[in-house]
Structure formats: structure tokens, C-alpha cells
Image (cartoon, rainbow, N blue to C red; front, side, top):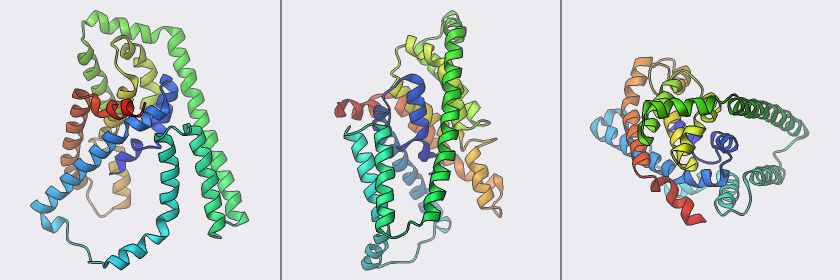
Length: 285
């Protein structure tokens, strides 16, 4: 489930992809909705199947009354309000991603003050952490844009295109080769690094074959999701191992196989039926 975080908006990975490829970020966010929901439903299906096959692996939780469920929702209404305003505004094209970020920050500040949870010390800490994160992200983005310019000026992208053309690969053969490379790199590299390095390199090839860049952006993120939980070095697996030191690493990898399989099926569906990704984008325009 943690892998869905890089796909479901607002996704930093999609924002950086949009900047690198000059693709509308709002379109990317809209395009991510159906693949994200599809992934969620498929994961739930796997969990339900495992629970039916091995009930001891998914014991029933304590029963709660309807009143208890309603009371538990009282503390989440500010987050729900933020989500509805930001994501609803983005999907409704009421404002851009940058405007949504500013509006979200302002609304969060107002809610914190209204609930009397904001002190001067926490206010200062928020500013320091925001500045630190912003500097880090802009530094990464600046380096990525420089790298993209370097590839453009050096002709490396065009060289890759000539190499593919000389090999006689068709559009979907080329796409398969690129996705396999992304899967392999994802086993040993962080997802953001893959996007920053590989997307500018393969952009001329994708454009020459007429692939939709919004569609490809979602495909890339889904492939990266799979790589994050794939042996031998699935980054998310080691994070989970650190949180659960008593569980053997091999047991975690074995438990992930059904989810990797269902993710590969989702990837095949998205490649075979681009309308799953692009249909909602077309409806919103």
C-alpha cells in the first residue's frame, strides 16, 4: 500500500516528471486517479483472497459500534477538508498545483490557529522545516533541469533515438525495453533518481514514437512502484524490515509476491488500454 503514495495526487514524482517533460501537472494528477483506484481495488482483492485462504493470517478485529465509529471521525475532519479543497480544486481546474499548495498551506495554518494548536515555537519549526525541504527540492529540480539541458545540447537523446532506429525496434518493443530498464534500476535506485536521470534521456524516443507523455508518466510511476517492492533490493521492503525487526526478510519478500503479480497485471492493463489512464483526462477537458 505504501507504493501507491508516489502515484496518488498530490505526487512530487508526478510534479517533477511534468516539469521535466513540460507536461501539464493537472492532467497528470487527473490521469493518476483511475490507475490509483484500480491499484487499491486490486490490492484489496489480494488481501481478501489471502484472508479467505489463510484466515489465521488475518484475524478479525474487535467489533465497534456505529456511535464509536462516528466519534472516531471527529479528529479527521480538518484533514478531510484540506483534501477536498486541494484535490477538488485541482481536478476541477480551479487553480494550478502551485496555487493549490499555497491555498493548502494557508488553510492548514487557519485550522491550526482555530484549534489552538499553534504556538510560536511550532510556528518557527514549521518555517525552518519548510525552508529546508524547499531548498532540497529546488536543488534537486535545478540539477535535473541542468541534466536535461546537458542531454539536449550533447545530442545524447538523439543518439539513443538513432540507436533504437538502427536496431529496428517497433514502438511497443521500445516501450518494453524502457520499462524493463526502469524495473531493473528501481531495484537499486530511489524512484526520484530514476525519473531525473532516465526521463530526459528517453524523451526523444518517446516523442518520436508518438507516445502520450501523460500516459507514459503514469506508466513510469507504476513501474517504479513495482520496483520498490521487488527483490533483491526493494527499498520499501527494507523500510518495513526496520519497522518489524522480528520478521525475517525472506518472509516479507514471500508475502509480497502476490502483490507484485497483481501490480504487473495492472501495468499490462494500463499499457494495453491507454483509455484507463487518459479517459478521465479527456472527460475533464
